[in-house]
Image 1 (cartoon, rainbow, N blue to C red):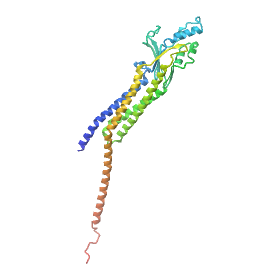
Image 2: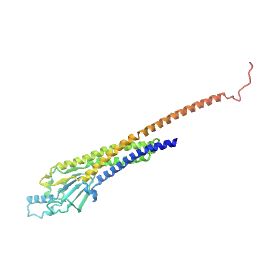
Image 3: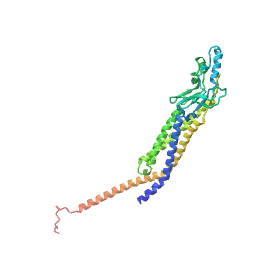
Image 4: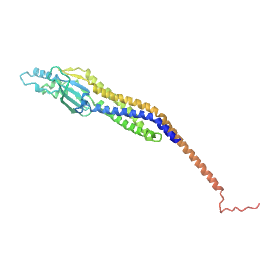
Length: 322
């Protein structure tokens, strides 16, 4: 009878284990995508195609040279070496990349990257990208006043980066906790570690969902504000746009955390009857222990009474006269 009960119990757990495995796979996928989002652009790989923002500055050098001619005069020097600004700049969480278009000598940019000119500079976590400072570093000192009073093209990454890092930590904790819960699921009736691990995973899933949602919303809003800003300032003309790849990555991470939590909620309801059975077993065990203790007490008392009725060998048992 015990084997039949164990078989039926394990059979009922099988589809619940499938739900938990689904939660584990969704959480693992979200964890990987969050890592890709964080490190996109950190090296010269295909991930370079997923920047937060791209700035087209291919026409800035010509505008700088025109400014110098107007201010200094055409007879001073050759103006072409006075500007080393790249055709484009891309902003990532941990790096800034730059390079040229394939037809950088043409008046109309091709918007096709010349990969031989790409270089990326690592940045400290939570840095602030300032296009004006970046451009000013690539022009002659006489032209740096062009960028002195800029209030545009400033992207702060600290808030969204911190939230993304916390999301990765929470997802990693959930991944471990769900894994422990999965491999000890068949012992959930008697093993406290299984239930405790599932609770930890569920709580961290909620935390990762909140953090990921805020992180994605923050960086999307910050980038959107730059898209809405004026693109012509101080006589300098530049363009800015958002690449789809980065936002697909960050919102897919958020979407998967939502789906994982939804499946985790279904799993928690599905496992409820198992937890209730666990409680019934504990209650029955305690009741059995109490009854066993009572039986043992009654047995001891009965044995005491029997012992009292046993005649002692030193006692005088001779018949007394009537």
